[in-house]
Picture 1 (cartoon, one colour):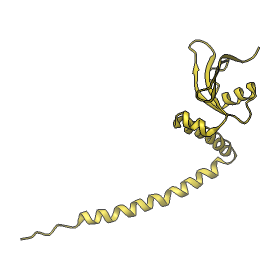
Picture 2 (cartoon, one colour; picture 1 turned 45 degrees about the horizontal axis):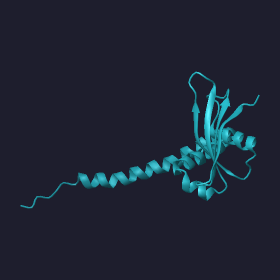
Picture 3 (cartoon, rainbow, N blue to C red; picture 1 turned 60 degrees about the horizontal axis):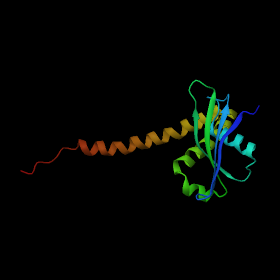
Picture 4 (cartoon, rainbow, N blue to C red; picture 1 turned 45 degrees about the vertical axis):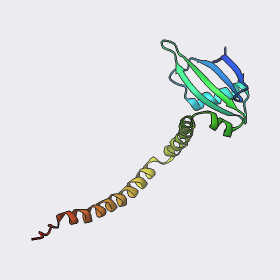
Length: 144
């Protein structure tokens, strides 16, 4: 028995995309969008195509996740049709996954680097605030 079940598979000729709605059984709370994209691309053999995960929805009381995906041949066309926020989240998730892998290698070194970078910035802010405070401290001259 397969863990993915196709609910709807439609070719939208007007928007030049394929719309797939499917159900993932037994993966509620465990499936991420990037993992779902990988599963869909392997199941439908969509190498070289742009797969955009639109929504993953958990069903109440069941260990099932329903997902809607748009498949485009061209990324430029996909970016024109789909909201920019969806691509930003997808890019952020990809970058977050890469950062997580890097942080497993040397988390202590990166923390030390960040602390060293933050100190000069704080000192610069304090230096900028001092002249402003000095200007306020000067008494105003009376024009009598």
